[in-house]
Length: 274
Image 1 (spheres, helix red, strand yellow):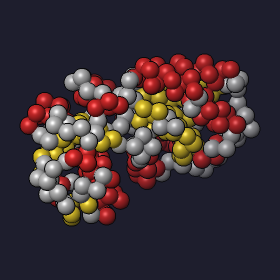
Image 2 (cartoon, helix red, strand yellow):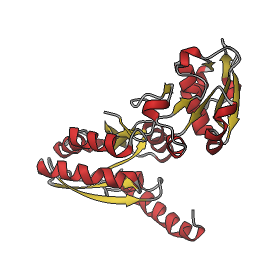
Image 3 (cartoon, one colour):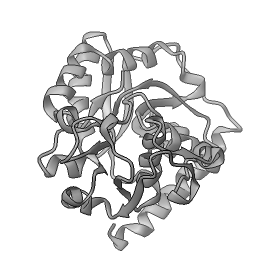
Image 4 (cartoon, one colour):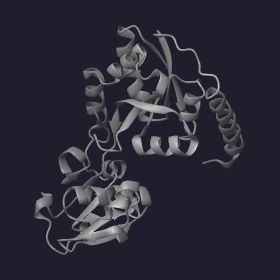
């Protein structure tokens, strides 16, 4: 992040905070339907996906103006302040944290995509063949390390403290049962693909897997569910969740045309969550 951008970001956040607070005192008047909406998305792959979403929505009489953000802290504030009608950039844990810490009254209306986590191996073809005492690589950063441990728990390889699971804060110290006596090795996420020869299995993020020539669809022997808590979603203000335009937006994104584009364009690095 460029430090030169920080003052502008603080100003935007302050402005959106004031506007969001004002919305709690004067609820906006919402039309029963709209023919044109503004949707906030993150820079990158979402821009390509929404080019297809826009075409599908237009056939249903809905025009979508896309607003691109490169700062995850801004789209929810913009939505709460009324500068957007919807956004599509975050997963449920992120939204939960934002609504709790900043008081946004924002709700999900439909799933979009996920970049699922997978475990890979150069020694095994199936996770069921994992031997006792196997060395298992996971990420050493809190978010990805937690995801990897949850995935191991889903396969019955470890059990975690319930509180850590509930709060999405699991670390190797939260393992309370380890029936196969696996050895957890925490490494930098970028180092895990290079360490596959030395590990029995390793959790690898999709971007690093793809750069290493690994395919999530073909090579991962344990896969995070695309409908899990890290699936991204379309969010709107609570008062708008039943609006016809919101249903049209979700229907356009979850269309067969968009699904085919995601599956063809990103080859498993992004997976439709619908």
